[in-house]
Image 1 (cartoon, one colour):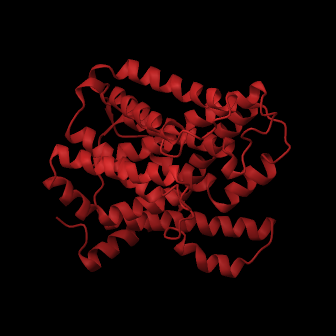
Image 2: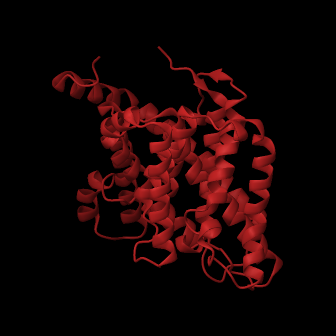
Image 3: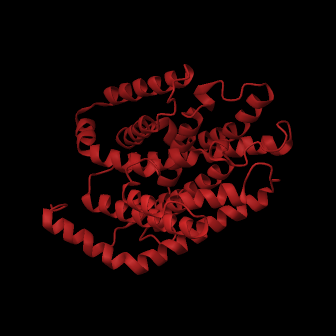
Length: 337
């Protein structure tokens, strides 16, 4: 039986992955083209606003997971492992052929890449899935006030780490869990104010996300006010919550399509070792002049190429993957109700 999904939310996930690819191209921490023109140039200010805007993609994905909830499914874990291992091995093979390197060592390491943080989002999602029986059981016994208190405590810890410049201030796993809890909260306890004013909240939040970094850059406060410009940007969360509520208010059920079912593959391919090498060492690199139309064209190409590659992978290995998963489930009697 084919699972019906809210296609409005599914297409929102497609928009998010598009923004994430764009973020990884623009963001300086990924070796991107962020602020490569003169710091006071028009291009620099545009990039600042766009980079901040694209950050809604990551938070948005986690928020959606929290809203719908995550459950421990061995079949899903096996599927994730097979998919990540396939792309890890393919990346190793391509790099070895065209760039050289230690083929044997990287081939041995490839099956472990799901667990070593190479694709941090998938690794954190895996941890969340493994802990979901305990997490969901805890959520079942917490009331609204208790859950909100936990969210505030975790948020305080994260902002505190940023404010005091902790060594690992990003703490992606803690951010992942907290955003998941926020998603569960708005599912269990809808916020009437947001439901009523979701459109103006979204417009204001989006506008502030674009304008805020430009203003802070102009007055020399880049990233100094962590509450609205750090890794845990409240403006991003507010914007994502209102955007999700807008999509949920326009329910349109469907079976999904080649684009919506391949969102994860787009992330895995462009964030693989070969994907990063091509993007950040051969297409975008320090000193290259920036053409935003060219950047958008590359993003579209990455998305389309990744979808086609994943469709080929499914065609070649999809049946074998299903047989392997079914065999493991039958041996250990897993995922049976």
